Amino acid sequence: MRRTLPRDATVIVVSKGDERMLDLYGRHALALPPGLKRRISVVLPAGRPSVIAQLETLRMRGGDT
Image 1 (cartoon, rainbow, N blue to C red):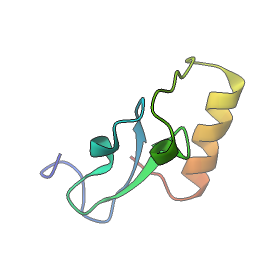
Image 2 (image 1 turned 45 degrees about the vertical axis):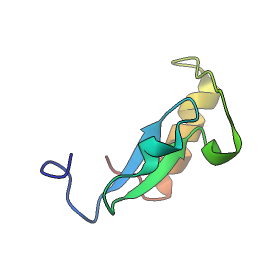
Image 3 (image 1 turned 90 degrees about the vertical axis):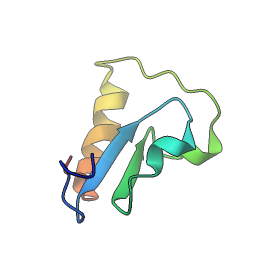
Image 4 (image 1 turned 90 degrees about the horizontal axis):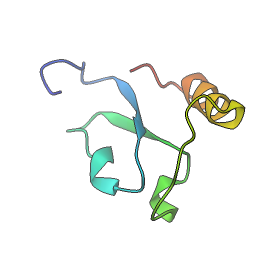
């Protein structure tokens, strides 16, 4: 990842609550679902309108990768 992503990348990270996934060697991370740090286990039903809306919101906040 360090060789692939630019240092100024804003990365959208999909996880079930593993905060280590947000450690991107200095790159900015946006969690999907938002509020990841407050959740232990999250299920993201792929293709659901709410998930798509959350993703679009993160893209508007600068998520580009």
